[in-house]
Length: 239
Length: 239
Image 1: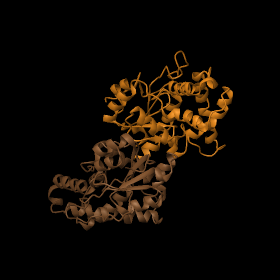
Image 2: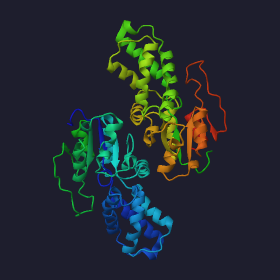
Image 3: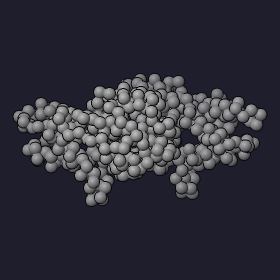
Image 4: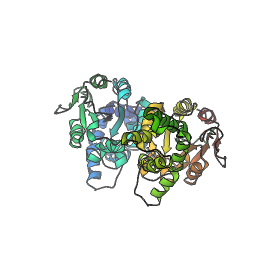
């Protein structure tokens, strides 16, 4: 059971709720089918991994003030150029680049997610708390049927996780104490950030985030709850 | 049919989507049943009307900078004190006052709303765009089953409608032109504000907003669409 006081659950999205690697890979393959010869032989899974690896450094540049506030679509668009050069991909139109950037809006949830969220939502306010921008999270939810009560994003506070302002957004809006909200993530760093801000934490490992045989995140607690997936989380939290 | 370019519909909430007058009246009556003798004889519908009449003046005080940013729960709480005196209601506990303030979170939608929104959502992004705060709109949506894609509120920009920043919030987040969003409201003033900001407009009259025989809002166009309710709006907009 969750601490009785918990009213709201905040979910990390990329890796925890949705499978970014498969989704970005699929978009690359689709582009390859459309373009033909020009794109033959690109390792799209490696491309997805390399793009994802730019995620933290580009947010850090924003947080250090080296570049002005830029939302995640903007960061993805900016990091794409170097990535295309690195993978020897040239001559993509602006529309084709946009298609790749928007692949991050079209990611599939892990198989347990929709059922788990539906159950959790009966008892708790459920919202993403993601570094993804509001439009990205909205498009994703519409496509994947994610039953969020509201869309919470780093974009609302113009600070990226693990800035405390992100974790405290929901408690502030709902006049809750930080301990009345619980962060759910597959990434210990995210949960440590939430815990420092006073939130409760639930660790849900996603061993396939980086593909079969890929690196996994060690469960370096302490966490208030650990569950195998969102359905087990619902059981643990009495929902 | 809507202009083909429209991607998102923004809905006014109090009066347009939900029946605030019945909901606030009901909360007063419930409090009366609990408290008994002390509250006998209060005209709760008149109380609801009087509370609602404080709405615009209190937001105007925020917008003129006479008081710092205060969300709608805060404004309702502040205006409640004078209202209680005016209606000769004394000796409410803090919890009972909170119960009245939160009546604005527990309002019922008009009968056509849930069906209309479900249909509209298949084709358009649907969101409230209300002066109500984020927690209020979220609580209301959970209770009433309003299938919003995301919760948009004046609270996100700390400006009240008809400030253009409120109407332009969704176009900015979604990189849309203002004309790709349409404001839906029962109040011509709200629609005029949206139109000045470049949005499309849909007028849905709610003749019962102020009760049977109450004043109605004249349809002083021009509006892009006029519909009797949200179901007719869905038909008009091809959803």
